[in-house]
Image (cartoon, rainbow, N blue to C red):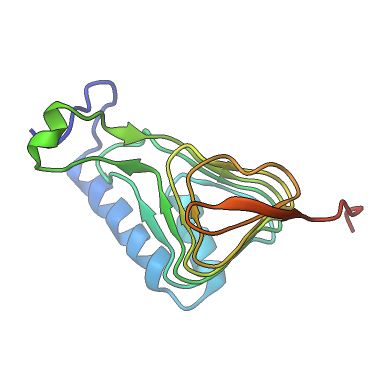
Length: 164
């Protein structure tokens, strides 16, 4: 058995293929505008004036729509970021003893995600938060926090500023 997915209806083969093509566009297209459009077509909630760097990897099953991604307005995501929406042990016998992990990742407005950051399932990154390059975010990040490291830890706070 690949994974225990009894609570969600699987998508048809042509929708799975469509989702796979959109993921390839999101990861490899040189145009930010096209990457954003592909994210929206994938069913993710993407705000206005969002920048997504090249090589964004979204780890989620293409056969179901049980995981979500919410990106607020004016978010900047650096290159080679990995957002994990679901994870399982695949073909391993561990599938009999470990739960299939899947959840929504939320990135608050005006946040900045540095290059090569990994965000794990279920994490909520608050508004105006900064995640340092190479960090692995395993827990929620509060509003106005600056986090870095593996695992990511708060190292400072940003100033509250009035929106433009």
